[in-house]
Length: 479
Image (tube, rainbow, N blue to C red; front, side):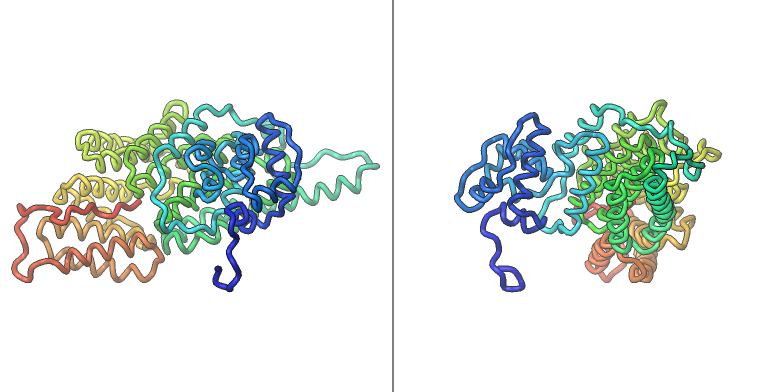
């Protein structure tokens, strides 16, 4: 029974249809289309779908594979969760879709259909799901693009024959509208990134979804020239990267992985290797936040392979930091320190390099914060606190969410070495900042810090040689 008192659909297929607004004929058509894509011609008969749902008829294997492809469910689920159980599985991001323009549009559509889903009760994803996506990406052929033959945005159009003038003018007007829309979307992404820095991921998540819906609609219309279309794929990849980060900040790990993996596909279609690196770096950080350090290393290694020559130094420094965070969680101190040293050297040498727009935040303060957190995860708070204090001193005051997290991390480090006065002062700073951003990561980390302070003895502070993390909990990671 739903909240309105209506009976819930009894069969999982009925729930799928209801959630997507599909009729029996819609399902039959989708099954036929995806079966044909799998090389199996099939009639689109609504009667058979009705029998699956009402008579308990089990679809033949080819029909199940076609429906699974339409829903983005891995084919392996058909064996591990026999019909109809696999219909209730959490949908995989863009499973089985081709790595081309049609696959990108289908992946975006599937992502938007799942944006209302919550992650409560679902474990943080990783492992086979990520491995499969990285394998598909590595094997995907280069995306076709005619952008090189298309005039740049705003260039004059070639005249058309007079007998096609009316249709041509209408098409030109629609193309102009699309070009204006993509320009508006492109200008909006940096603003949304700054809003995320200031207020946290929950503030921007809904706007990202709305912009993605507009981008998807424009791609479906297909009225743009190749150059504008490539820009649309690029801005969609930018938005999914930001959406993935916003979901990770909110602790919505399943949604975060869907966004990142969809963005990986979009960046591939847009022929943008640096943005591909950025999305893989985001996947790596998300894997750290979700508690999957081995996946974090896999994503960082894939990013290193995405650009010939390794890419700009600042980008390589970011990937070194991502590896360091993963090595720290794995308690691999030597590898962590090597990665941090590499990151510092690369960032120092990157002062005059052009920086990708998505990497605007990665500066000395961010490197100090990430390095300090890695050392804190290694159980070395005395070394970590120096770096975290430096990050706080250098951080842009407008980045409220990150300043709150830096203060919490620094307070934790000072507390673990026995400097309770400094720890309490930093906690008060975090408490001052927290109400000004909507970040579940801040809320969770601050609650953990308050708990640590509440169980301190009321007598003199413990000596620096006292055991470090007596409750054995690792500090909440942050970007």
